Length: 214
Image 1 (tube, rainbow, N blue to C red):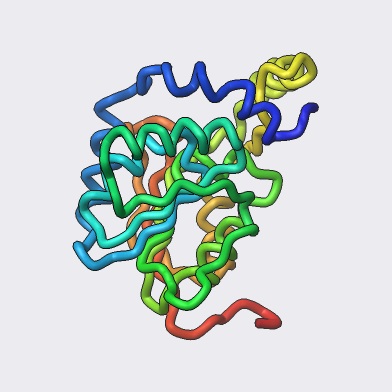
Image 2: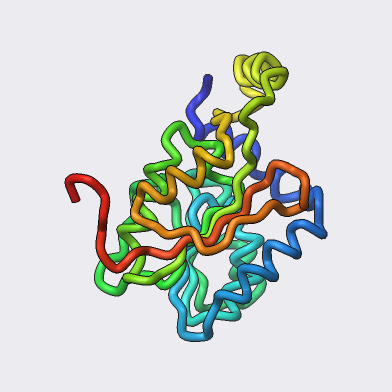
């Protein structure tokens, strides 16, 4: 399987042109996210692709940092931010685990359609925990494919030919346990759209880090 950064670099232009598949579910996710935002918040988004969501949310907060592993995705995102004239949005290239708040922790960390594309989704949750202030929020939406065994050979074949990224067949229970183990309390969990396998989570960083050994 080709490196993930290479896959997303090759996909970036087509990804940027692709319409959102379920606009109703996306708008529901954005509405729930907006309900947690405040004008003075600092926000960090992991795996932001071409920063389409960042363009929507950045005007609502003090500062927004949008990150992605793909240099091509980041370049497109920077062009979009410049063309939109959004001055409080930084678009940066970073791997999960490769970026930390330097002096001022973030109020929210967002990860949409990312955790199921990682071999270790716990690394993203732990990074979010490290970047957040006490009581800060980690908001994610994740496709949970546990039990969908018929998809494994299809995805494996597509990966062999460089047509699909790594996919982690997470279950909702495993996902929520992973986020809790990183030091969060889950305060909202739902599926958008209802009945599908897209798990929306809002988790709050606990005041005391209860992870073993930390």
